[in-house]
Length: 133
Image 1 (cartoon, rainbow, N blue to C red):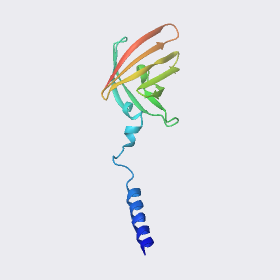
Image 2: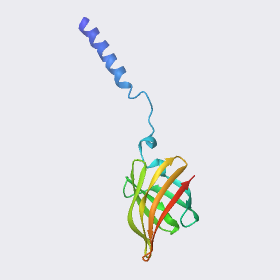
Image 3: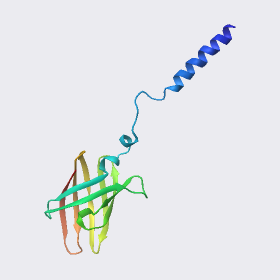
Image 4: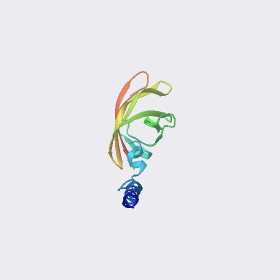
């Protein structure tokens, strides 16, 4: 009889312990380092004195990358690798002879800062662009 009672108590204790999976709820968006970059950003491209919009979205072909639509105001998309709070843009051709490379840093939920090079096949410009929401 004591064995049966002990078995019931242990079973109840194990059931209670296993029913609590976590004390704090987690949001998948908090765990994905890409989420903070996603959205439409107003860009002030200081070297070119241009204002335009860039939309950053998840890359459906690679979960560690983002697609930057209209990067450098060239109308095409650049692909960037997200590493922590940084987007790394390896050298890639966006349109015609225009290629870009550089990186961008997450400053806060409303601001990103990009340093990149734009090569048009003749000259290479170093640019700083501030992305704001």
